[in-house]
Length: 385
Image 1: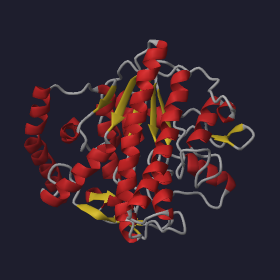
Image 2 (image 1 turned 90 degrees about the vertical axis):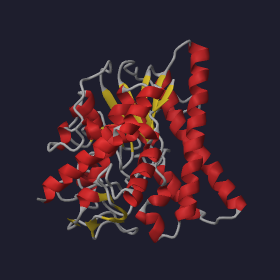
Image 3 (image 1 turned 60 degrees about the vertical axis):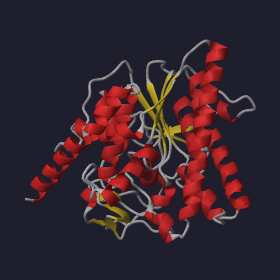
């Protein structure tokens, strides 16, 4: 079934040791029945593939934020917290496998299971190159190009006990709202139709993996892109929000339909867990506005904590300096801060390991918010002392 950990559960992630001093051990839960972890996605999940690619081919190695080389943030990515929490820390390392349009080639040390590339779209290409998109990542994993044929399929047998992680679509949605940001009914409908196509690409990737033998999935919806500083800067807030909502709705419907059809056809109940990234960020923003960040420790939800940060006409500054990132939601105008990645990583571990809470458990989690908030304030005070 599709297990979505609802918003009331989100605050409980703070109580999982999230604010421990050692960030990589912050969500150290014992491994479940999963045998491994395989990751596909974009800059939110990339831990070094783009860095490896640009180190070889230019124009210059990026991203290179201080203390977070290879990450599109000022610290570890959420995928690293997830991998550590499930007991597969090394799997979050970049795969360093790249489909060059002809062959799959190594671009750095091999061994990691993270195929995500910053700037990826849900098709073949992305900002980092014409083959770095979600489809290109599947080719790199498969070491074959059969997904590009009239009868798309993967040739590699997927480990049925591994957890396959997919977070993709945000860059496609940014493209859609940039090309069409009008707010009349026809424009909103057009964006919704395009967002549905992007959701179909993501659901299609999941389907290819399921047909190859994968049985466990962690799928993420997307946060409200209208909340990003980039959307405000570009005056695209409303269009960014409505296209996100359309995508999330379509993805949920498509994956639900695929799951039911797969079960009917094969008699197999897929384990598809949907991480509520949208709900998490809404709660973080609400907490900052109404509780002073008491529950999540984030108070700045409007501006980047890295300066000069990200600009639309170039990738990243190499002399970026951090200011207030521990309490900021964004590292630059688009990407979450390391603190936000911590929260997301903890939510990912919860989603991957916990069933939907019973009503009594749900109430207990809500009641625990006050205790969690007090713990956060105590830690923040200790740091400031």
